[in-house]
Length: 389
Image (cartoon, rainbow, N blue to C red):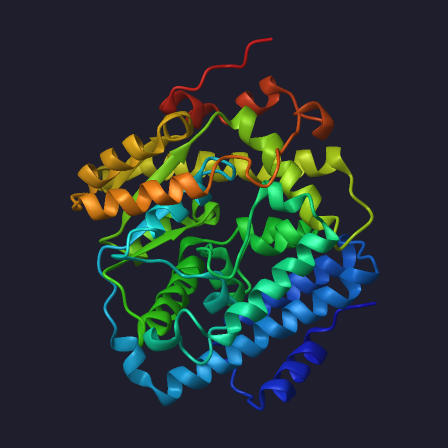
């Protein structure tokens, strides 16, 4: 099977009953993505059904979003003030921290169901009963049925906070595609995009948040994605009042875990899973991302006050104490009610509640020395030493 962009575009337009996809800049990354999947992904029977369906669904969303924004231009007037972005290498606690902060009722996080099916815009009165919630949970159940071990790695649910990479898929500028499919040429292209290209992506990202908050606002947005490491310079300019929480863990621990996540997720759509190749791929791209982000921070001292650093070991040891310090640094009220809500979330979500995620560097062809040497600036700045033999 060969994925053809024009066929998928036509099918999406027919399904949506719409024809305006908005800014045509998305067509280049769409073409590169599909070419890369055709060449690299080695799809199995499930993958051959899932890949075009995923792309078509994303395009249908895009058509519906563009149509909604044309009919209701006031959506673009919504204010997004001092958003909080959580970013860091994968497997550094970004998901757990995001979910914990989401337990504060003052915080607005994009939930999985509303990101997957954003139209019509969510409404406060039906936010907990929208039928799209059950539809989204059914999809997650299907993924867990195909790859049950994925639940222990990355628990998902319709009401769980979603990553920003699931928003930028609508621009076809997202590492979510590379976690799902082997798409080496696409990842190389994505990594090479300059700040100006990413500024356009963040403009779409902002409009998407305005869309979600139009009839369902919150006090402040709390957002997250390791994907922001690849475009940190643009993020800082696109959201000049944003606060960045960067999570840290030794890269030697992170890379094997991230490789395992990619291997398990891709195994749903391909039978050709090559662990050592995945290890090399993860090390190449994520070491570049963290080194690039470290360079951005070094070259933007004027933005130092916008960053808060959180170490995974501290968060794991005492999440409530860690979050208490965060609220103080953010200048947010850590009331008894907020504390109780967050404590209840911690109690209800113990570590490894869905099983233990096991992995080693060796099974992905990596060594601690190789990982350390790929991230020299990051390790030096944040105090990570060469792993002991």
